[in-house]
Image (tube, rainbow, N blue to C red; front, side, top):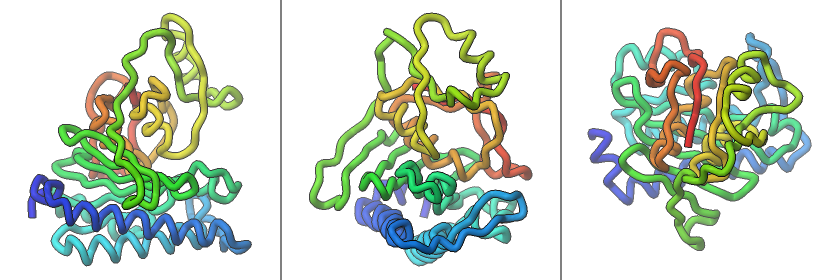
Length: 261
C-alpha cells in the first residue's frame, strides 16, 4: 500500500487514531499511579514504564494494521537500521516530554509520523492529559478534536496570519546564545512563550504562536509527527539556512531548525 492510498482510507485513518488514543490512555493510567519506574538510558535521558507501555501499544498496533510498513521507535534501538532499508516507514516517539510526565505537567505527547523518501508526510499527535488529538500533513490539511473522538467536532486548524507581534517559543530562564541572538534579530514586538514537547509545533499550527527556533539538539522522532501537522496547517520547518529537514539520516540527531507559522 502506498502512502496516498493509506491516507485516503478513512477506516484505516480511524484505526490509526485509535492506536494513538490507546497509547495515550495507557500513559494516563500510569500518570495517575504512584509508580513510574523511572530509569536512565545510556544518554542520561529518563525512561519510564509509560514510555515502554506506549511503545508496545503503538508498535504492535501499527504492525498489525500496516504489516508492510516497518516501525522505527525511540524505544527500540534495533529499529534504527530500518531507514537504511525502507523508503516508507513509521517513526514514533511513544512519550515525548518524559521529563514533563515525571514532573506531572500536562505537556507530554504521543507521536506517530509516516516517513517517505526522507520526508515526513503525515503525523498524529495525541496529548493525553489534555484529551486532544491532532493529525495532518502537507497537502492534506491539519485537524484537531477533543476526546472521545466520536463525541466531539473535528476542527480544521491553520497558522496565524496576524502581523501585530511575533510570539516566539523560548524559555526566559534558559536562553542559549544562539537562540538569544536569533530573537534579537526579529524586528518589531516579540513575546516569549513556553510549552513542552511537540506542543510547540501544534500551538503554531493552531495560530497561537508564530515561531519556534530550536538551536539545540533534538532527535528525528521528536519532530516528525508535529512537523507534518504544522505543514498541513500552512506552516513550515526548515534548517536555519532554509534547507529542508531530512529524516532517516545515519545520525538520528536533527540539525538546528526553525518552525514557522
